[in-house]
Image 1 (tube, rainbow, N blue to C red):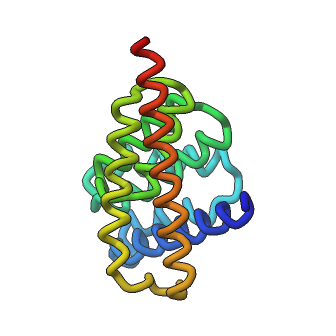
Image 2 (cartoon, rainbow, N blue to C red):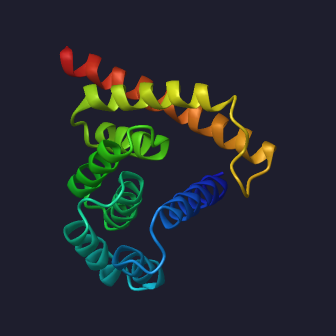
Length: 175
């Protein structure tokens, strides 16, 4: 199950990367910087490139910045730097408020850290609403209808669980 979820998250991130690539003008300085990020294999060097991209191109399109923030969030997650996970997750959400993956991952992080539980509930509930609306949309390019439905189902289940867990933590904190 963990492998399947990891593969689904990888497929989603690859989709986000494709969206970001499609939104940059080929050969532009932003595109060149983004391609360099994509090609970098060393995690620390990649993180440095992501942070440099953020500083150098703060006015690039929102979806590209959200993707850059999600990649930074992944690295911080791998390094277990929870404050940075939340910081970059919130940045991704501010640039792309309908980014279900960011909403769920930040919600989970807030609950795991037992911080900002109201926002954890808010983000999980927003993800549930967005996922409900996505059910009527066709599968994204590169995914079968079955894969799309599975992704929607798994994320809706996660959103329910994250919301319930954060609400339970809120109730316990209130007692």
